[in-house]
Image (cartoon, rainbow, N blue to C red; front, side, top):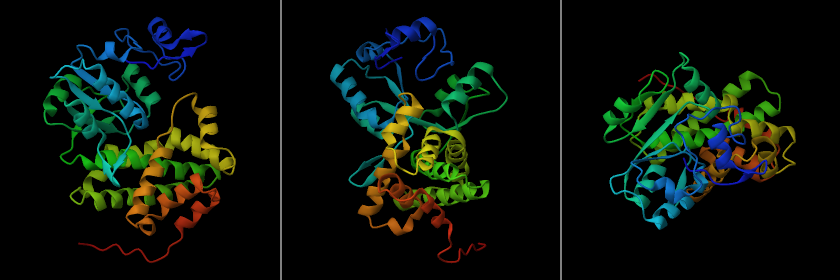
Length: 322
């Protein structure tokens, strides 16, 4: 397991992980399996590897990929799995992170996403609880994954259309900021559920604008609605946005992130910027009032209370039977 080296309590983090089988800084109290070895040299980690699993903030992906390419020791028949929930814009269009990995490393890469928070998943893994976490995946040889990794607490579902997975996995972090703002204003559960509903609508609309063939049913699966709910109940973006609203936007995201996350990074902030830039470029801001309001609160000093305005009905919603 590659670990970006740093000093924690006057000791190398990789040494601490290998001795205590615990990442005391980022995942305190969560035990790491005995067969996992933390290594700070990326070249050594990649050497002779058959399967690479990418689980890192999406803003660091390019640097890691560039270093792997520079080291030039990746096996030609290696495979990759991306568990990264983010989005990258290329020429003002969203691009799949697993595609970026495939193109840069010239290997096959699948994508996994689902409704989970890291802490809960680690405890589920160690306790084997009856609650199941469902993951959606896109893979040419999905039977290989099912046979080797399927468990009663780690269940695979295959999706034929990959685009919704990464769009939802990225946009749900933006919507979680909005729900966090609402919670910081001590609003009711009714208000938070309304923001989640509008957020899901805008996620779906964004996906369909750029990927018209995406199926409506997929938005109700694990990495759609389920992941959105999970993130809005207790993820990092929700937690920091709640504090941002409590402080009425006076403190920077960097300060709040440093105080609350102990070195971990927010995904929703960078994603909000990227999505807003796309909407602005394509002149679509009026079509996405919630996402644009979240951006304005986050970066343009707009009062967090203004998110309530998104709930006011500008025109009658008309839902028809087919």
